[in-house]
Amino acid sequence: MKLPELSGFKLISGSGGLDKYVDATEIIDFEFADGIEFTREEMFYGHSVGITSLMFARHKPELILDAVKQLDGMGVTCLCYKPIFFKKLPSEVIEYSEEHDFPIFEITDDAFFEDIVLAIKKEVGQDMTESEIEGALEALIVDELSNKDAERLRNRILPAMRKNVEVMCFAPVKGHEEEFDREHIIRYSRRIALNSRFGDRVALVRFRQGGFLVLSRDEGGDMEVLMRDVFIASGLPEGNVYWGMSRVLRRETGFAQAVKEAYWALRVCQIEDDHARGYGEIGIYRLIAPEMESKTLVANAHDYLKPIMEDDEDGSLMETAVAYVLSGCDLNRTSEKLYCHKNTVRYRIKKIHDMIEPGSSEESFRESLNLAVRVLLLEGEHKTAN
Image (cartoon, rainbow, N blue to C red):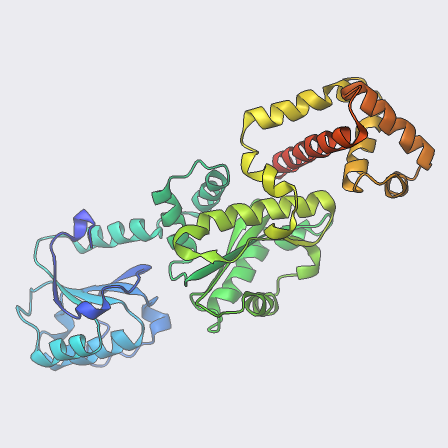
């Protein structure tokens, strides 16, 4: 109601419903005239601002009450009317509005309906295209999206978000990319949107080669159950993707954080070839991921590993360093991963130690190598995804 285009709106009744959310806007012209039959699916999105001149009732004022009842029952948020045909509304309409907390506004200025519709669409993010949504998600991940634009993005993706939110970021495993092209994502998303069980609690948006799944519930809701229901209803091939999952966070401050957590958890899944990982399960990456946009952190990691990266003609030293780190610095597991003898791995690790951190203890070397390699892996996966 603070939008400049709505400055001429005067609340007439139904103040108890002012905390309702809005995710759309509708112009109501003829829908409630005699002889017209329709359903919400045909005419209204729900959770919308209904704008009207009440022309349909100009000869039959009694139609207004019936229209208000139907709009309220369909989930429309409020009704805004221009006093062209009616200077005052029938008393029974006001009584219903007050009793059912259904706000009714009078438009007291000469604002054009089209301007009001565009202003509301822009505020709730309905004017964002698919590419703009993806661009906003990219900016959010690297902390280049303002709080206002992050809220606009949230409203566009899931305007009716409940108190708690969990975000999942997914990408196809190698060989299954065709199952997540644009047409497939649209199909999965449409199945979710049309499923009455999910309504305003679930949204799916495309992102790079995969997408984001946003789930929301009120207090006490089981996100795991909701997630499984979404998999089944949407047809998402769960076994053919890597899934990164955020923690369950509060809606007010948690949406942006949840998107970032899900994204970085996914990158860890891809690095470690683990199909699903929650943000709370990514270990040391939780310390690294928030700093990945820091040029200093990445530059220091490159500088630390520079000796072996520059003197590694066949790539065996860097390959061994990565396998060693991902194997928990266990020589036996590393040799199995590389299909070579344990003594070969031991020789290479000693050479790496002497090249990049001579004179340090084995414990200090392992800690530094572990951090530097994981920074490069996370950076590489981040760049590959881009």
